[in-house]
Length: 126
Length: 106
Image (tube, rainbow over all chains, first blue to last red; front, side, top):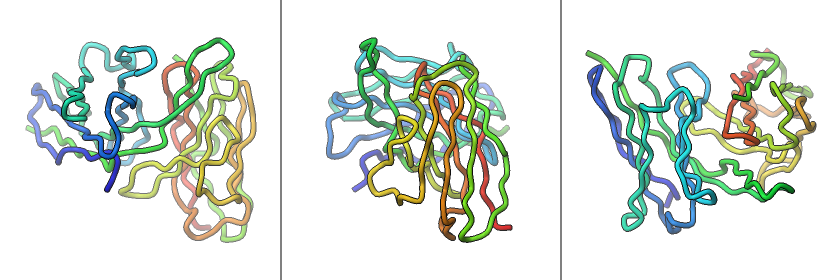
């Protein structure tokens, strides 16, 4: 079974919010950092935010600050990404991803993504 | 924010070719760089991490080099399954992707 299983496609109206889930299988969510990356149709990959387990806090891309919230329910081994004030430009495939990393000389932890969910398509249309 | 620039955006090549994609960071990221391959309708797949470390299961025809601000991904002996879009990603400070390089059939 896939490690990360995402919720199904969503259709939302402009101004609404969407909450996408990402369930972890075979591992405990508490041992992982889950990040969220989106891809608009025909466009590139864009990191939105995620929960940095080593730092114990959520991090967000500047572009999405104030509009995106990542949360998790460890009892369900499920991470969530909520995006508010949706507009047509938010129509995209949303991926959750996890990975591994290592500590650098400055004791900072450097994390890259090696396991991805299959994605959740979110369509924003009136 | 660290910006990542990939060159070229599109690369046309033939089976058996050796191709190189360049990725440039707007500031030094040491060697905290990953490369991903993405095929249509699929999630990205990790190829290279820490600039030059090959992910388990990835064919040895893929190789990465570089440090600081300049990096390359080379595919030697291009195979039919390698026609795809490739992204670099820095993970020195948060995470930023390059805009992608599509390798298509000449």
